Length: 145
Image (cartoon, rainbow, N blue to C red; front, side):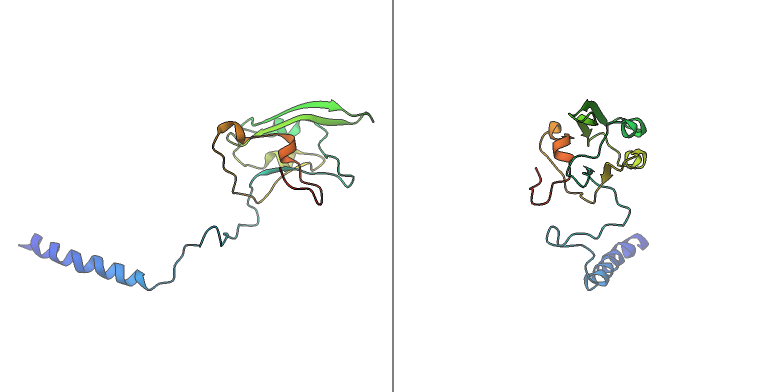
């Protein structure tokens, strides 16, 4: 008999919880119209910085790849006509990246940084290997690839 009474009281208790939360303001956002405010220290997609001349800052020292615990950074050095080193090939596998920010801290010239972008999705795994051209910050007036 006691079990029967508890079963009957369970329905009003459940409805009470429902009605209590029914009139509270919503905690969800109207995504994608309304974007979530990210914390100041949020680390998203990688970017390669440019200097004031528009050239890439990376000198291909390899410290970012060495500091990366997941080993997602691959680079090959090259030299330009002025004898300066640059990254001929620079790739980051975003599927392996754990977004720790060690590459950003290890870079002596501040060439790599993690931005605030969190909306990067693709339909093929190969598209998550970002090349240097995709990672470079666009020049003023240039459209991002």
